[in-house]
Amino acid sequence: MTSTEPSVFTRIIRREIPADVVYEDDSVIAFNDIAPQAPVHVVIVPKTEAYRDVVELAAADSALLAHVVEVAKQIADQRTGGEFRLIFNNGEAAGQTVFHVHAHVLGGGLAEGTLG
Ligand code: 5GP
Image 1: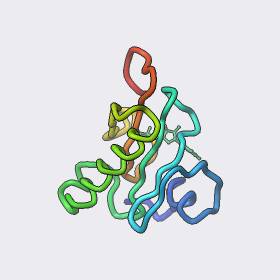
Image 2 (image 1 turned 120 degrees about the horizontal axis):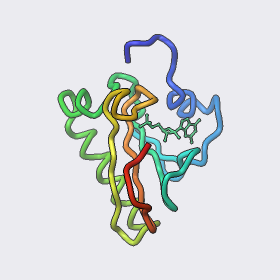
Image 3 (image 1 turned 90 degrees about the vertical axis):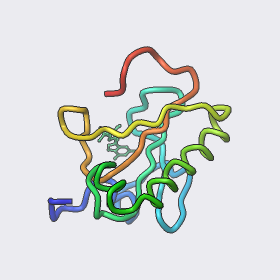
Image 4 (image 1 turned 45 degrees about the vertical axis):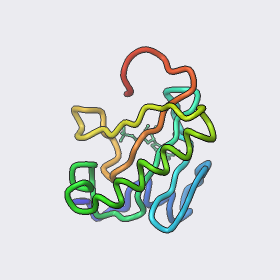
């Protein structure tokens, strides 16, 4: 993170703002997106503030990235029958609005088109 301000996701992790949490462990938290783009739309956020996007995360901590994918699969198994889209927006022009790395898990009767 380049900003010194905590991201909205850090504030959710700290319970400073509410969220509908569906999964949490020592390294990640997952919650329903406030503006869902599909019947199931969960955001998975690594708790560390060190990485702004998946490129930084993959370069620095591939095990944590793999864990995000495992958690996505667990959520999909419980909520979408196991099939899902996994989206990382990288950069403002790509639709990223929160610069704290996160994955979107989408499933359950997906609409046509792209996220964002
Ligand atoms: P991005 O566009 O950065 O890839 O995704 C950020 C996502 O975070 C968006 O889908 C947006 O709806 C979601 N989001 C932003 N603020 C909040 C919030 O306060 N609570 C929840 N649950 N989701 C949020």
